[in-house]
Length: 156
Image 1 (cartoon, rainbow, N blue to C red):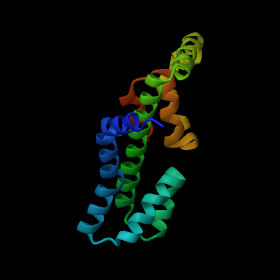
Image 2 (image 1 turned 30 degrees about the vertical axis):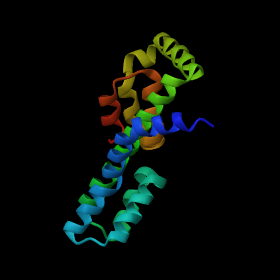
Image 3 (image 1 turned 45 degrees about the vertical axis):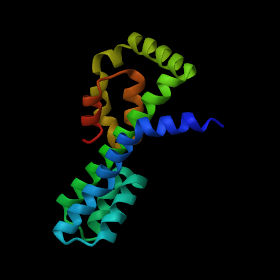
Image 4 (image 1 turned 180 degrees about the horizontal axis):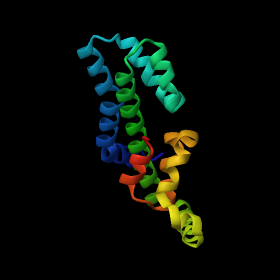
């Protein structure tokens, strides 16, 4: 096993992991401390969001948390997951010839589809509640759509 490659990869991606930890954990926990919300309830909401995605909202409200706080935490966790996924996809897509070929073929097929050409990234909006914030970024990445639109649509 080539440990130098692993160290280089981790060193090159530590910023995104730190950003992920800040978005997913530090912001919600800090906010809960400032607002006097029990940290265990906040951690439960964070874990529920990773596991249940948008269905964590009823869990948070069921825990007695303020709906605005729940919205902020779920959005922060979802945003962290989506950004981390884009970074992982970019890394894998840049390093793997198989993935790169898959992307090229997928994008060629998309160019031929009238529905995808007509709606594009906006076609994700009705799908987000069903597909969630783990699937939609992957679709957007495969299709080569603008990330800012994909990020916005993944949080609707």
